[in-house]
Length: 96
Image (tube, rainbow, N blue to C red):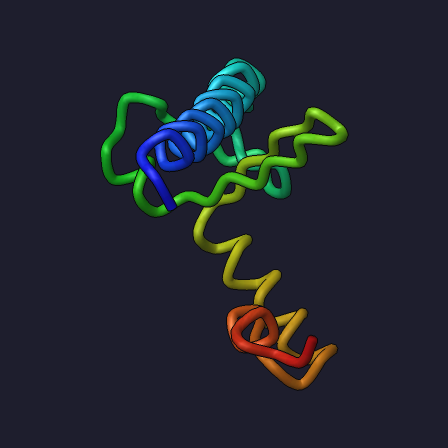
């Protein structure tokens, strides 16, 4: 791969990454103020809450959902019971 091809590839990948970041930041305004399941309040200024709560973004539908740690744990247990495996195991290195 020559220098011209490397530059073109770098430009394509950086443009795509910038576009994805821009779309994600645009959806940040849609972040709710409470848990989407139990309506527990979310403090956007709390560092602890920012690192423990989970955000689910569906770009196609332009929806953003926020889940407290308790609701995420319950949802993972339900999924684990229904499928017999945890959601993390199901998405790692499975069959193609």
